[in-house]
Image (cartoon, rainbow over all chains, first blue to last red; front, side):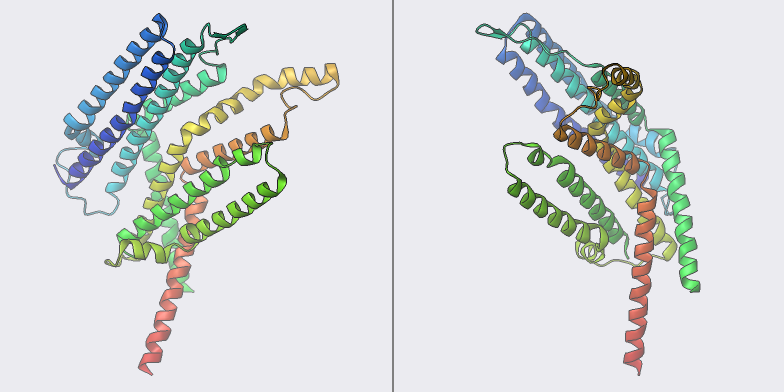
Length: 190
Length: 194
């Protein structure tokens, strides 16, 4: 392992802990919904949501903390990488780490929205206040479904390291640096 | 400029953009509330503009001195290395901001994707009833919200693409700043020698 691997490992552990902390309050939200309107459906949803969150938490901690070394090796590249003397060697690694973080953020956003909508549906289902009957809101509209699908796709792609996106960003960054060199030369000539 | 100063510069720029987005797009509830009279709204808007201008000036336009204060002194980089660090750190930070703003812009993007399916019923409704279609017949507050969301979505996409023109402008700006600093240094040294 070289410096880049260590840096990636530390950052991955940080990312894992951050998202584990973000997931924890969602379990309280699920429990709150069930306490507000206890029914068989809401209890089932609560149990399912808690299992889902526990699974997510376990996967996060296992992949980012316990197996962080392997993930860091995958992100940085080969095991026998030379020390990063070159100024650009850190760039793809940084972009990949950024992609993984953003992917987790997208999945976290989608998961929390889906679970919130399901819980809300079971909470309002068949609710009436006196003579007024409140119809249950839909679990999701077409727009929401489309949004979740887009977010889920983007999240999974980013979590996998987004190879095309990273390659494109690195290429564009290096192109801009060349432009800067050109500008610098022009300025010096003046 | 040193490496840490460049990173601080990128962080300041991103914080400025994030603060601007929060101020301009997330404070709209005040304008949308019908209970308030016009004067508090104008005062609130003026305060927002002043605050936004202050943030933009110190975090985006003139962030060099603040970055130096944040990061402290360090080894000076060569022009090529400086260009690389400035471009890369700014791009990284801007792409990250774009990706963080993405989840909130996805509903807007989904609405935009839905537009082709709404055109046909809207046109037929317009010709049948000779009136504005119901999808367009919205209160001004709703139009304000839609416009804000639309601009936020555009900003998100622009940031994810790496904000090329913004980075180019920042590079030019820092180049001009550097050459000015060198000229003033030369002038100072010549005065001391004479």
